[in-house]
Image (cartoon, rainbow over all chains, first blue to last red; front, side, top):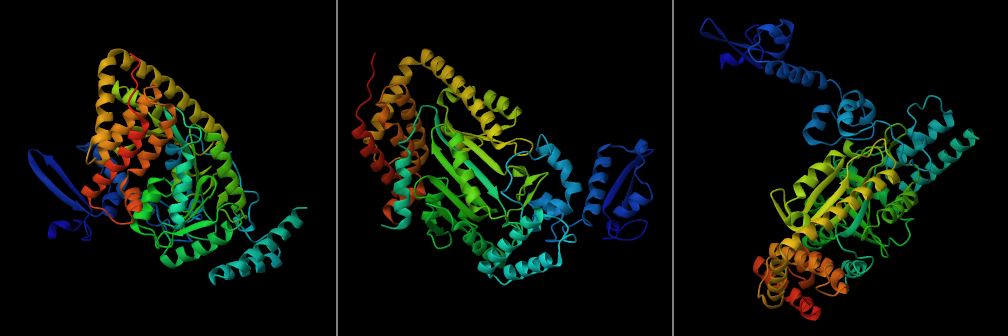
Length: 169
Length: 353
């Protein structure tokens, strides 16, 4: 259908704008990019302020597509749709977008409850500061997990923990 | 006897401990995930298999947790019965690939693997024993903890759903509130409680229909508050609700003294002579009977039996008891037989006036 293409660039239209001008109705189809670039939504001429919200939702959707978790590929869009995240790393990679939601959900944003006995070495974000020895152990651990040698994985983990403890001392 | 039947036999005994009016049981769940793996809901089947194998190694140190069930290997009735005992979530009834539940032999406790999150440690005690449940759950958590948990110091334990982020704790108290329902005050209470960040839902029935007058009052806040503090807060709310319920019961009985006694007598008759009994009717009548026990119309020693019946008359437990899948009519007949036996031994209601 012709009307479903953007009147400016001809791409797939995302917004239909109807305005009553001197008693006659004008309909314009726009793609999301053109609608933003050409400022089709000047606030004072809008018939409904609702459109402003629609626009915000539309473009926030566009931006979100670019943000995703580097470990599992989970996006904010996926989270909004399903209500759950993909992995622990999502809390790091999507933190900027999650914070406003968390503010609504929780009273405070600082954890003060129980902590695990000891944080495993992998929890620390950068491995750069670790000795080469630890990095190789970490790699071995990941390999063991991938190959499902969990007995070995536990042993390597214990070794790693011992080294971290020694460093701490 | 099959392992699952002997497990339920142990659980049935737990009803006898610490039973009290109004509060039925306390439940504390701790949600934990391992850092190395994707969250269970997001993971593929192969990843879930890896999670399960890893979790099994981490949980094998647990003392008194020797019974484990592969949920896929269980029959639908057995899964449903486990859910009716609140050991697993409803979602696992349908989506249970590579999920397992490890059950405690002494306490009513279970560790579910791959049910939304990697681990869900759930402990239930009869009566108002939130602190005890939390302590037990925390001990299990410490025993499993091998430094593999997904945790960030600033936002706490990482969970697949951000509503549990932080402590990862879901504490709940199951309360029997016929007074507040009958005096139509439950809606006011719901609104008031929700405003202070505590959730309240009816356990049986749905959003439009309250069945059995049983409500689950649970914490909503998991970030920025200590587990013990949240438990104390929830406990305070529960105590206030108990006071309100007692007041509501008094006012209901003042206005409906004759009606109440008549109703109990009639319902006792139904329980002793009915040929079939639907699940909805049974829950409703059992609730009235519990109410009557609280008022001394029946001997107090029968209270745990009524609590137990509320679980045993559910479809999954009925099917398990008969060792076959029952049609709805067969269920209703079987349910009637079970309640007959119980209420006949309980004896007739004693009205003092």
